[in-house]
Amino acid sequence: MITGFLAIAVTTGIFIALSIFLLIAERYLANYGVCNISVNDGSSIFEQQGGITLLSALYDHKLYVPSACGGKGSCGFCKVAVVEGGGPLLPTEIPFMTRAEQRSGIRLACQVKVKQNIQIQVPEELLAVKQFRARVALIRNLTHDIKEINLELIEPAQISHHPGQYVQLEAPDPEGGFIHRAYSISSPVYEDTKVQLVVRLVPDGIASTYVHNLNTGDEVVFTGPYGEFRIDDNPEREIILVGGGCGMAPLKNIVFTAETRWPDRKIKLFFGARTTKDIFYLDMFKELMVEHPNLQVHYALSDPLAPDEIWDGETGFVHLSVNKFLEDNADRQAFLCGPPPMIDAVTRILKDKGARDEDIFYDKF
Amino acid sequence: MNVTPVWAIFLGSIFTNNILFASFLGMCSFLVCSNRISTAVGLGSAVTFVMFFTTVLNYLLYRYLLVPLGLEFVSFIIFIAVIAAFVQFLEMFVERFSPELYYALGIFLPLITVNCAILGASLFMVIRNYSFVQTTVYGLGAGLGWFLAIALMAGLREKMGYSNVPVALRRTGVLMLIAGVIAMTFMGFTGMISTQ
Image (cartoon, rainbow over all chains, first blue to last red; front, side, top):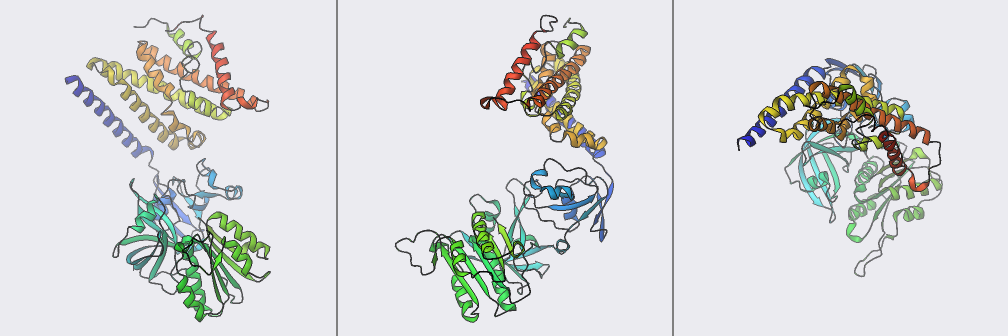
């Protein structure tokens, strides 16, 4: 009995002693003093106590580099160009880098530790990214597994974005801390006090489960806007939109934004679904088509129709409809959002019809 | 007390009782990290360093704390905790004072925590009833022995890059054969010194 207590006491004592020793060692060894982080050739410089990762240092100074995994080095989103002071490329970063990126000093901000003065380069748009607080105003079921989330901004009260950009929503991680997931903004850019998201419930998905369990009045936090989708300002160019599932979100934004700005612009929207149960927003687009004769909307169902299903639209995979309704060699821009096989198939058809690489924007998920 | 002379313990832990080839401890990192001589040397020196210091620390804790209190049975937990803490400390130390070595060792440093050869060395020093001086020498010798083993294997694997290994034996298969053959040659030393 006494031996038992003694054993516990001694073991605990040694563990505590080791922990204290490590804490003291960390205090003195991992203390790198104050380092300067200089962004874009000194356009902004901030001071940072060394020893933490570059990603958290940038977050502390309100520079929201995209990151979906929360700094675990598993998503590869937080790429920044480190000009000086980043140390050598680590084995944990190599899988996310192309050779060209390795040569040009691109690093994952979550793997670079701030130990000395660092100079970095980030795209100008990233400096405009802010952190928003918002309240859930309305949640609607679009299909059995897709919900539309309407958020009203609290702080800052306005957002300025390009159609097709996305935000990173913060969701509590059951294992502690927060994770971030990217969702495209589906509300048009002129509704600048609102952000609407279209979220599909992923089985066992942490963020999508969190979003699907939100209630009206709940507060959420997100950063944004991010993303490189850019619509050409030339109204003569046709816009092709192809999506599947919740890939509808950025496309809806583009349709409404573009139709409001250029009421006669040619837009063709293709949406791929499995069955009639997966269809949403079709009635809304039908109303819009009445006012805008140059807008075409085609929904395609890939599964064979069940005996009780009624459907007068397209059938087969969505790229077949794209092939059917696009004429050759028109001047066009295309925006694709959906699963990789769909994007690959549609890209092939667009190229056959004369589109160049720089005219095709896509988001695979 | 063990009466083996110190020089015999030193040579024995490197050759006749090589911790890897005689006791087959630390096999996992031995097989995984032996594809290039440079990484093998890096890992080997880190293991030698950690093994030397942890056996000495563990000896002191065991002899002057656990034995007087009659708590030999918690030695496993204590040994593991000391090894883990020491590796943590070493990682911070190397990162601070030698960033080049830190980046060269990369993931291997934390891996040492789970290298069973290191715990094995601490346990052998208990089983064999070594004195402080014997333990010091044994810790160093066992580390050097492991270093030698992984460096040998890495050298052979670099050479093997040019040979045509039968398909069925590629990767781990041929490595196990090679490890076995080297182990047998090391057994040849056994007649010379006995350290048990």
